[in-house]
Length: 378
Image (cartoon, rainbow, N blue to C red; front, side):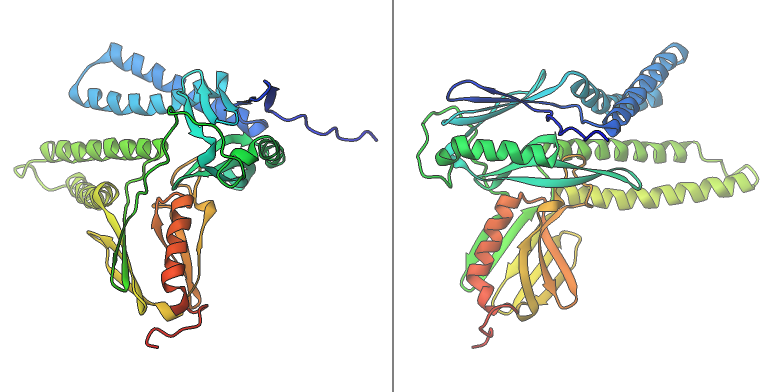
């Protein structure tokens, strides 16, 4: 019986002297990648065909709103289709910088190698459909208080080989290396923290905005906003076209009224969610006696005894490049054990910034927690 040959890998690595060039196809490997590509292509073609037929038939305000929302959705579908057909992720690494660009439509992001630390591989399990999932490796590094990812469709084994190669060639020039690297002034600056930290006496207050900063998350917010505006417009149309009182009450009239009320109720709920996503803040207050979590403006305060808090840590797997809210909204990053339960906070934080916050809390209040040694009143 013949042996299974080892995979040759999807990445193309070119040695250019003191620089490495790595090219990774954006199209995911395996049959699931082709199925995903066919579904996206069919959806995009279907939208275009329906839109062209509607253009020939009629034109109205309702159609214009629907066409606008559909255009946004089609653009979100057409861009991944284009990238999956011809796209390549190109990574250029030298003793001075690490450049990442997605061809043919991306822009170059240049990072100082002296600011890069904790280069590693994170395995992410993606669910293609219910009961069907696959694992991909993501190459990750910390850059200031931000976490940067590339190599999104690599197999974990190949991703680990690339990380080992980069550490062998350029590890000494990184922030956790020994050499100082080279200097230049055209790099991406280390990102500023999202959380605002205020220290007053023996208390720390952390304010974290709910609205995420990633491109995909902002795109989801834009789609949700468009859906909400269209839904409120539908309520307006329903109120205009409601049956008049001079007509006898009928089953249709009753059903129409119930549908309108239910639709209005869900619109109010979704409007509250939108307001929380857009303007909401998560307030975390920590003292030697307690840890308080509060979603402002609509949430309630939850107070936890610090003496019962233990195993304060960062969850790396809350992030998903495939879908920004795949682990729920909002994706919480910081967690701790409280009795037999697990509590999470730190909405939409990058793991790098979350680790800094956890280190600060452990340094200031770790001795008062359940896995510490000192009582709060001592």
